[in-house]
Length: 93
Image 1 (cartoon, one colour):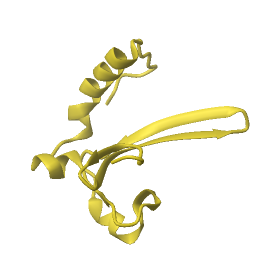
Image 2 (cartoon, one colour):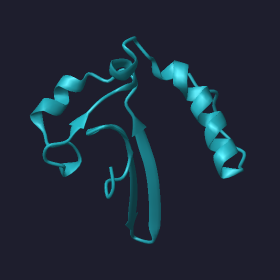
Image 3 (cartoon, rainbow, N blue to C red):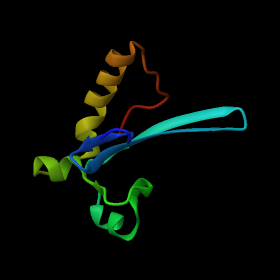
Image 4 (cartoon, rainbow, N blue to C red):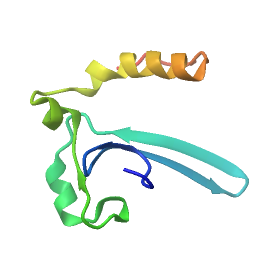
């Protein structure tokens, strides 16, 4: 929900998106919760957002969703949306 970044399912974050700038270097990334052990989030305030939760694809879909199941479709969608070609020195595991 605005103004929060990431991908949300109701009041629970499914995917965190971040950008860091420092020392003339910009880095960015994301964390998509596929089959994450969500119990660890009970010990912190995720992303510093009081009253918001964290979820995963596995929880939302009611079945185990491994990273290997979503990696290639994610990469394909990324290339399509950003009209680019991704290059890797190794094949995804």
